[in-house]
Image (tube, rainbow, N blue to C red; front, side):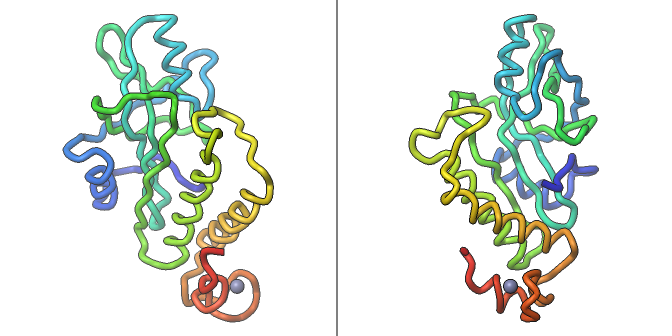
Length: 202
Ligand SMILES: [Zn+2]
């Protein structure tokens, strides 16, 4: 994904926060990975830290941005030291040095992931379809007994591959700057909204 930590708290980010955690405030936290902490595994990371050093878990939302395309809230946990300081101890895949975090003490981690909440910044079909296919992938990953599995999840190829292909197609279209009225990425010569965009979802 092309998302990173937002440089500033924009109007769209405020709208996203109002949706996921009404009345809560966002804060920037420096990323200080704990020894042995793994990317994307905030809950086990914080549990391990509590075991080593005490303190507690604070859940909330980490805010991501794909500039001019979308903003995204990811269910996330940070560590609160015994002195009461918040610390981001989970390393980031693309090396972000800070995160934008919205603490929500009313949330707790019960072993189940929550899907990211996404909001389009640009109102067009490509972005809407990208968000919809991203949501569909998470639903398929968490269907039935797969819910609650953490880390690597095995999903039958016929269920997931068409969605992954669609996500890649849309992600590439958006990345190279195509709009709904641009020629479709498939090369047919027709506009996206009259070509692959018409058959959506898939
Ligand atoms: Zn097409």
